[in-house]
Length: 196
Image: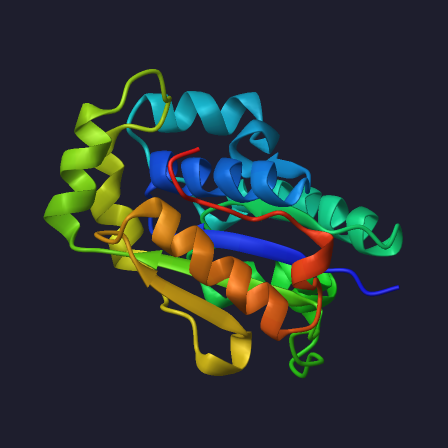
């Protein structure tokens, strides 16, 4: 059985990232695991105060997301996982767990896994962050996230999208990419973005 996990990450665009994940999850019937709910209370409080997370703060969170990913892959299921995997090391931890911290040569990204990189202009992302409501991460942290962002390389099996595009257009492209990998066929999903 083929399975596929899609990790969706970006600099910060929490609302777009979550919205895209929700659209894809609904259209394909795959579970959506929102990375934000896996943060510890200490991390949430730190971000609420406008303090940036360190690598040490993020490690338990990333390892927990790795466990979610491994559970889905082991069960043969397809799923979406959303998180801000800002650094190459973070993406390696999502794929390989704690081995990424101790091994210099890791296997390549599995073909059943791909990342979506949602990217955009700093001022647009800041404007969207300021206008969102109810999220603990302060817009003041945007600068620190851009400072640590390591854009993904082609060998990380990444699909890049500019956030100025319509969310349904991005979702359609992601669906096509999943089909091109042979992970689903047109016959086993009813994917449509036309005014539904």
